[in-house]
Amino acid sequence: MITLYHCRDARSFRPLWALEELGLEYDLKLLPFPPRFLARKFLDENPLGTIPLLIDGDTRMTESAAMIEYLSMRHGEGHLSVGPQEPGYGAYLNGLHFGEATLTFPQTLVLRYSRLEPEERRNPQVAADYARWFLSRLKGLDLILKDHAFAAGDRFTGADISIAYALLLATSLGLSDDFPPAVAAYWTRMSDREGFNRALTAQSGAAPTL
Image (cartoon, rainbow, N blue to C red; front, side):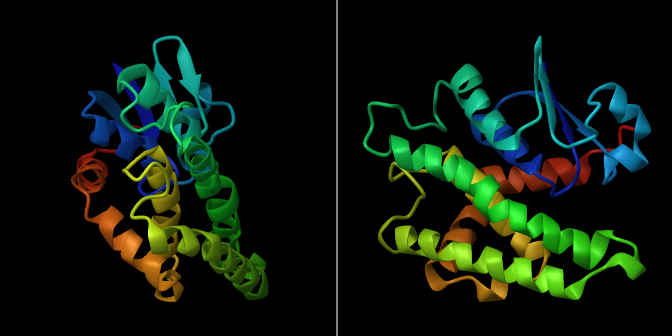
């Protein structure tokens, strides 16, 4: 049984969504955020205290974008992947990492300095600067989506999960009104997917683990 340690709408939503898209069985361990402070027992499982943690037999993973590819290739017959022999392979790999390294990273600073830090340590200027940084990085994605319905391979893949999670986070931070038109339409398509909504239902119905 695959086990996923998860916080609602955190990066762990990526592998949760992949699990639902692939129709895999899994055990969902729901934790409060941030678990390193609010679920100290979790440090016994992951000393980093970060989410997600995916356990599959002897395999233990902590990187959400890597989990998408792992689940696709190990358990999903590659259904969420683009193979090296396909024209969209480079775009797939780029999208898989673009969603995390380029789109999610600046938003973590928006989240930290607008909501997570104690009131006296919050910094509206830092939050605003990194919000603009995030929105500026959507320009390249907008160009791709003007001609394509998906990020790579002209079909839904793990690259879309990686990127669309960043758009989910942006929505929760109040940044979605500034999405370029093609990105806004893409986000609507992604959030309408059955797998996405099954993942929302799974995290809403899960009882806290620790």
